[in-house]
Length: 316
Image 1 (cartoon, rainbow, N blue to C red):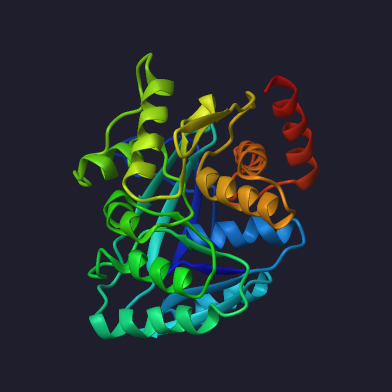
Image 2 (cartoon, rainbow, N blue to C red):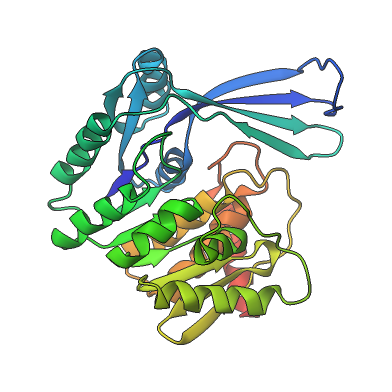
């Protein structure tokens, strides 16, 4: 399978006792890893013995370090060159409260020529692929319809597509007919409203109703299926007019960073094993839940996923 994740980054995970605004903080530990939503998906797949080819943009100034980090952890990566820097994401994990704060830098802007080369690199790899996952934000100055172009290329090649991206590119890609979109509730509502700069808050007693409505609306706007995630409530999966709820189970959360990516990876694992969409979504929920028990984004224990999947199946 192929993962199109253009906006690669370097994740700096910093452990501190507590984040105190306006103060000088001393880190207890710093770990630098390759990052980006597609990297997290591939990391989960490798934990289960599955491989995927990552296609991302690698800024010239940090290209060697980024690709070395990816290679060291066993990733199969095609790094399309681009001028400038690889973006940085700072992940601050507080040991006292287990609260996690993420600061995503925008990264260097790209030109139309860079995007055209990236799109061609993905298109050239599509033949004979079982699945394309388009995952993550678009780089600064990339065309908002960029993922829509990739979805169109995949559909022309007869390759199913799962899309997980920010509200603006998501909305722009819906008319291209992705086989599944996987936003969280805030992202889904922002994509539907077209107000991508304002993310709604997932609070209130009507979250389940809002998720169902959002999933149905995304299908009406062009997606073949929509899985809207709602944190500890689970996932509302829309196929046509039908809604399937996949619940989760409570766990002690260490970090929810990358949980959405782990959901996508678990769902992909289910599909590759021949499961239907609802059963694949259940595996996705179990995988996302297991990832919340670890600090590393995309870090999961396969045995724990199976344990949680059994519990989800028992309460469904």
